[in-house]
Length: 367
Image (tube, rainbow, N blue to C red; front, side, top):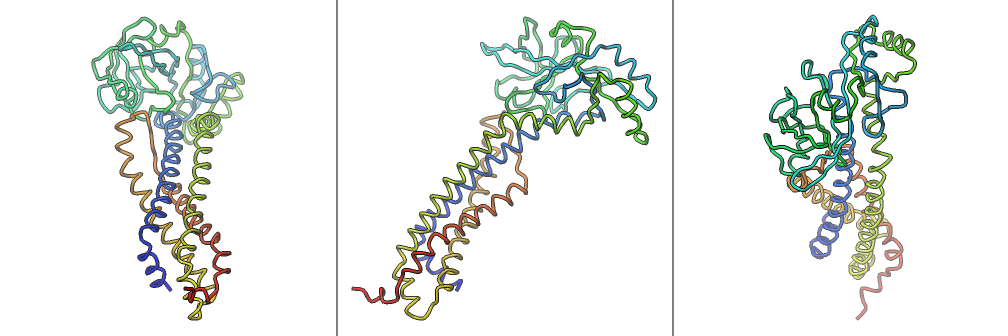
C-alpha cells in the first residue's frame, strides 16, 4: 500500500509540494506564535527567579512586578530583620519613567538595588553591576533596539545616566527593565524612606514556620514566595498580551486547515480515474481510504518538518532584526503542533471520503 501511495505522490509531486508547503506555513505560524507566547512568559518571570530571595514582601494586593505599585516604609525592613529565622533582608525600589535619547522617548521599568549586597541586580552580560551615582543598567533588547552602547548617556526626568551595564532576562517584550542605585531611583521617585519590595532569605529548615510567623506578625503586608510572584507576573501578562497571541494561533490554524482540506479534496478529484482503476482491479473502500490517509499523513509530516526547520533557521535572524522579540521554543509546543498537523491531514482525508464512495469502477473505461 505504501508503494502505491508514494507512486501517486511522485506522479503529482507538484500538488504534493504545494500541499506540504501550505501545511509548512501553517506550522511555521503556529510555532512562531507559540514561541513568542513562551517568550512572554519567560520574560515575565526570569528576573524574579534569578534573584537570590525566597520571599518578596510588599503592600497588600501588590501581587506582581508589572502592574501594581508598592510602598513599604524603610523601618519595616529593620523590624523584619528582628524576626527569628529571617537570615537576610534587602530592599529594592521600582519606578516607571520615560527615558529620552536621540529624539526618542521610551518608558522603562527602573529598579533600584543595593550596590553593596547586589541583591536585586540583574544578570549582566557586559559592563558591570557595581554602579555609581548616575549610572544605569539597560536590558540587552532595549540597548540593541535603540543602538545604545556602554558609556553612552540617556536622560530620565532631566537627569543624565551613563550606561554602565547590559543585562539579560529583563525583557518583557512589551517593556524592559533598567537598574540604577537605590539613591538614584529614590530621587527619581521623590521618596527616600520607602521600598517597593523587601527580599527575604529564611532559614531553610524552618521556612514554612518562619513564613507563617511573618504573616501573623505583619498582617498588613503581603509575603509572596518567589515562584508564586513569578506566576503572578505571567498571569498578569496572560490578561493582556497572551490572549491576542492565542487568538491569532487559533484563526491561523483554522485558515490553514481549511486550505489544506480543500487541496486534499481537489487532489482526489484529479486522481479520480486512478482510484476508479484501483476499484476495477478489486480494491475495496477501506483500501482507498487508507491510501488517501497515508498520502495526507506523509504531506503533514513533510509540512511539519519544513515549518519547524524554517522557524529554527529564522529565529536567530528575527532576534537580530527585532531585538525585543523574545522567542522560546519548547518541545511540548512542538508536540502539540505536530499532532495538530496530523489532525489537519486526517481532516483532509476525511473530507475526501464522500468523493471516494461516489467513484465507480466503470469510470476507468470512459472515453
